[in-house]
Amino acid sequence: MRRVFRDDHELFRDQVRRFIAQEIAPHYAAWEKAGVTPASLWRRAGEEGLLNCALPEPYGLGGDFGHAAVVIEELARANYLGIGFSIHSDMVAPYLDAFGTEAQKARWLPAMTRGELIGALALTEPGAGSDLKAIRSRAVRDGDHYVLNGQKTFITNGVNAGLAIVLASTAPDLGARGLSLFCVEAGLPGYAKGAPLDKIGQHSQDTCELFFDDLRLPVDCLLGQENAAFEYLTRELARERLAIALRAAASLEGMLEETAEYIRGRKVFGRRVIDYQNSRFILANARAQSVMLRVFLDDCLARLMTGELDATTAAIAKLNASEIQGKALDELLQLYGGYGYMAEYGIGRAWADARALRLFGGTSEIMREIIGRGFA
Ligand SMILES: Cc1cc2nc3c(=O)[nH]c(=O)nc-3n(C[C@H](O)[C@H](O)[C@H](O)COP(=O)(O)OP(=O)(O)OC[C@H]3O[C@@H](n4cnc5c(N)ncnc54)[C@H](O)[C@@H]3O)c2cc1C
Image 1 (spheres, helix red, strand yellow):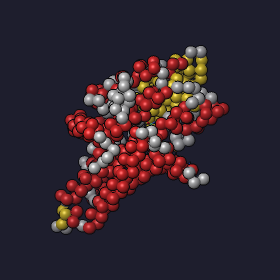
Image 2 (spheres, protein in one colour):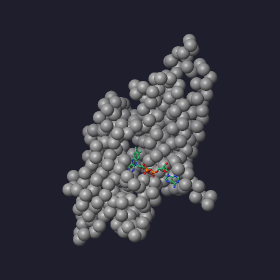
Image 3 (cartoon, helix red, strand yellow):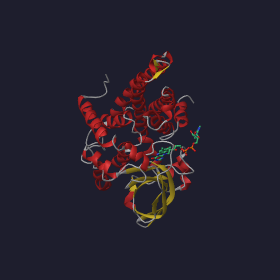
Image 4 (cartoon, helix red, strand yellow):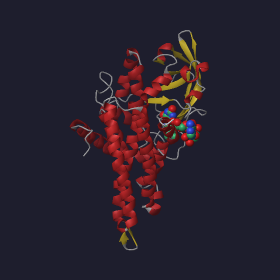
């Protein structure tokens, strides 16, 4: 029993599960091969009310983060970590909502909620990931335009994205205090996208590079104040990191059930794999850790919904959840023997997909840095 969710959340969960079973499960293997999810999935998700569900009305669906958490959890529990709804709904749209003008919100958010416009967040560059103040992308004011030059990499939803929120320097002398965010629409002259990157997991995720070459952006594409991006990024981190932690925890819970079922059916030396004590101990360890994680994350979720989740606690959530998930999935995979290494079984995909969660949204080392600062 989880106390953080209300009845309306649980009803919504049933709806999300149905959507996943009907709209994602039959096609996911093909999307993994194609390296991208089709735009039609996003429009269907919009029609079903799965996008921007925590965003206030009139631009979003007026739910709370409990609804967003349901979507995040159910996708992860069903082992579809390659679907990029969370970046779109829980990162890009909230930036627009928090820092955008009314005109910017009216221009982009309704289409994002309908799934007609897909959002990406473009911070990382080839030479700057953990240390964002080292970014080289540069936006220079020229009359009523900014001229943007630079390159981004590892951008989730990059290929599909009609709108990217891009971090660029507007005052290089000011370092972190000289960064700004821009809303960049696909198709503008000087904007190019790379092909989906060849990753070790999350193959259906259209992660790619973005290139800006003398891209002229009208000044009304600046998001919020000039040179205020670092403060904005910091303000949004708790929700973003909790969203990743929730994915990790639900993915582990889903795989724990799937593994238990598999080893109940598999016989070795005349006994079911689950009849070996070692197998039950592996399941027990994973269950013990995931239950403890769940209680902590539910508390974080409750705090987020009342505006009380601080950055350090969110870092603790992301660090614990992604590390526990990664290590537990590795042990669960072992219980499948060679079948664990075959793409046919979900455990192999979960194991490879999960590896990214210790890297993006701030690496585990950066989480330890944040947590460790409290002792300095
Ligand atoms: C699948 C995937 C999707 C992604 N999606 C997006 C996206 O949508 N948008 C976006 O902007 N970015 C995205 N990223 C980028 C991601 O956020 C970065 O990869 C991450 O922040 C790490 O940066 P880096 O890769 O440059 O590694 P680096 O910063 O080069 O780190 C290299 C190593 O140094 C360690 N390190 C760095 N600083 C410290 C320190 N102070 N102390 C100790 N160790 C340290 C790191 O932990 C790491 O082990 C994505 C990445 C992946 C893999």
